[in-house]
Image (tube, rainbow, N blue to C red; front, top):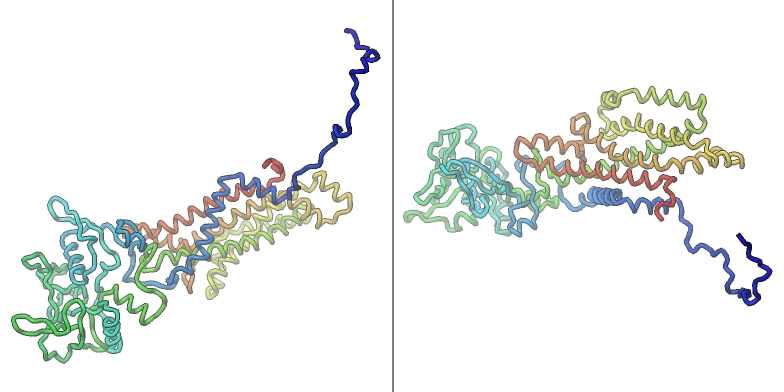
Length: 527
């Protein structure tokens, strides 16, 4: 192959280079990215972790804000309103058969008549829109039943004369009727279980039967059996009362004779009355207790003891987050310090510290809780739980930290830092600790739901009782929900279980995202 003769290149082939045509290395236009900025970019690219973080934030905001939007508290309860269904005013106003305080009720003809009797007397829509379906033989009825108004009157109450007068004042001012005519003692059912039932205001087919059946007129209406008297009232009747719904203030006329209904009966200790519980409840909370509760309305329904599920879940979630965060923070600090010293120095120090952890970690947590409850019986259950979780909770964090220090302490950059005279504390927390931060932070993120789950489990089993005072636990709600299945009130368990499932799933997704984000080997992969 012939070589070109560079000496014979024509001069016109040469051209002088202009100064502007010279190229040099240009300065980078991008700004340096810190360790945490890069971690945030990598985390943002993990869609599952972002969604998990958003759900966690929603749950935390619910725990913080929700208690301020409900007048109910965990210590509140009302046995009359046990297992009432969730009620949202939006669905009530829209007329949708969902979340409206009603439930689908299946009953026989007698049960239908009893609900119809309450609806007829109070004027409430106990059977929604009066609609129902029956089986072909007409023995069973199915309809939407109002769990709030359907409680009717409950039992006969005995109140003081002062309260009786105050209720009359309240009725005259608001136009809402609480007191209804009573039934004469001799006209009440004779069976023991029905004698004090204030819902039985009607004439009965057989007053001696254990299950009374209302008498109906020719039009199929319930026949009232109110205690009525002429102008001269008996000595044991409270006559001075202007009824709102049942009669006018001038009484009623029957066959040319004016009668009045008896709204109270003098007994030992006060006045016996029939009070519709829905309105009596409103009166008690707005006029007597003045606790901010305007009427019986429970967004998530109530438990078997009449506790508001929304309030209990909000307060329980708040306690769980605060408790788990405090325990996780203390375990993190103690575990990181212990594991750093053990892993960095090694040798006899590591041997002694590891044996101590093994001995302490071999003690079952259940034994620790039992011993603490035995010796700290009068102390707060939350304090017992904290000490039990802290006693061995930091050991896992110490083990993970120790493993990371063993992994990185002999790396070249650590040897270089030691050669340049860096102190042990600087090497430990400036060079080694940040490189193991990914695994450590992930474990911290998973410790919080683990603590909540453990606390929930202990409350669910009844080992720890957090009901004392104005607090509660999600586990207590789930335990109440287990019993509600028999009562066909699955909503009691639905909401706390949804909270726990969302919490555990979201923290797992969030923790995996943090692990990848703080992994130094992935630095630069976000570009």
